[in-house]
Length: 143
Image (cartoon, rainbow, N blue to C red; front, side, top):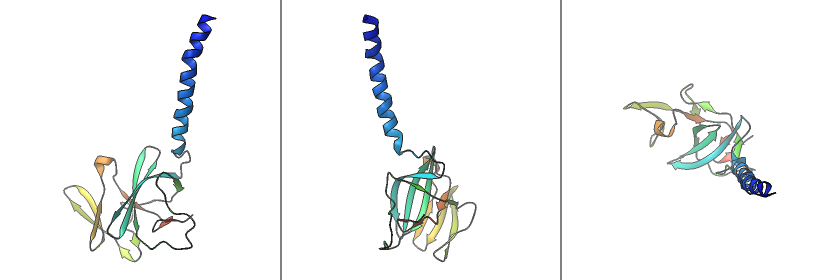
């Protein structure tokens, strides 16, 4: 009986810990097409949205636009979204009629998004590419 009481005292805390640990992980996307929004920054007329999928971080660049009243879902930090990402390295995008050109300096890959805005990759943070998506306009999520 004494051994059973000791076993329960050891097992119950481990069980409770595993329950709380799994609850903390529920925000991590389980679906391969879901990206968890980690942060949203602003650079001049552009948003840089940091999203996580599996163990990788993606830096998504989106032109700022006024929030449309028809927008049903605004991108929020801590939420997950289905996104179709397009790599900056694999294609030269035209965003809102602006062809984005690369600037390479000191082995850091940067891109000009307009006459006042240069956005770079950040290898120190594990970001080796910039992305854009048709699923976000301004900060409005489009399915």
